[in-house]
Length: 164
Image 1 (tube, rainbow, N blue to C red):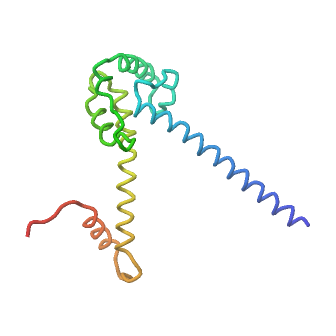
Image 2: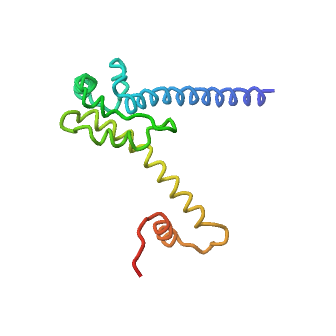
Image 3: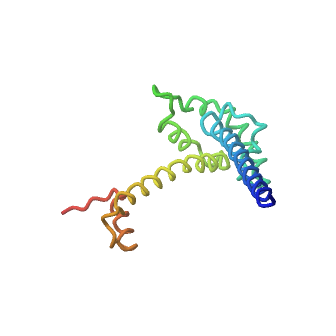
């Protein structure tokens, strides 16, 4: 009887830990949503949400607030703001817009936008690399060394084409 009670306690602790992780994951999604609003709709970004940009240091938050006010009042940037294409996405327009934002005028905001833009590009490249490795390293290649695998993955993922 005590082993059943012990198992119930262990299962309860596991379920409680899973529930806590579940709650934390969705809280992170809510924060990420605010980051995406900043990236895609910087002129509609609420000044009260500036504190969610957690990678700022204490002094940078005040600077970010000042930059955001100046950014949102800039009519020239507002005209250049990215518009959604026929597919309902920003496509490259978003990257081009943030590239055009002057680093001298808005260094803190531009740095944060660049971090958000890079976040998705790097995960895509990582997925492509793992897919290439999965194709290269299959059950028929049992004698493949790590060095040879690294060289084959590099060759498969690079855009270099030699001139023969």
